[in-house]
Each structure stands twice: as structure tokens, then as C-alpha cells.
Image (tube, rainbow, N blue to C red):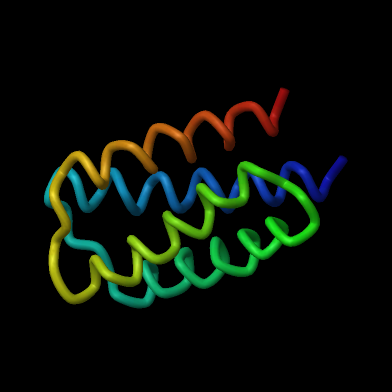
Length: 92
């Protein structure tokens, strides 16, 4: 049960990174790399049959890309909402 909460915290941290990018706050490159790397490792659960891990893989790639340039805003809102939802559900 504790593992689910830790994975939920990772989702919430990544959602926070997306929201910081959306609203134009200064995001540290290390924070983007850290959350992107954690989401990538978490996204490898797709090989065990977890369908929602595709969201984690897509989000991690998007976080890494956003270091170099800012993607369109709609591409930032979608993973932000999905990761927020996954993070909050893990605490229920």
C-alpha cells in the first residue's frame, strides 16, 4: 500500500512540473530530468500489462522534450490532468 502512495507522489510531482511549465514559472532543468526519469522508469510497467503506464511514458518523453523547447500548451495540459488524476486516486 505504501508503494502505491509513493508512485502517486511521483505522479503529483510530474503534474506539478507540467503546471509550472504551463503557467510560465521557472522550472529547474534538474527537476524536469528527475521527474521525467522517474516517470520513464514507472512507465516501464507497461510491459507487465498496465495500460495507464503509457501515460507515464508519454509524459516522461514530453518532460524531456520540454527542456529544449516549450511544446504546444494543449500537449502540456493533457498529461497534467491525467497525472493529477492518477496521483489523487492513488491516495484513496
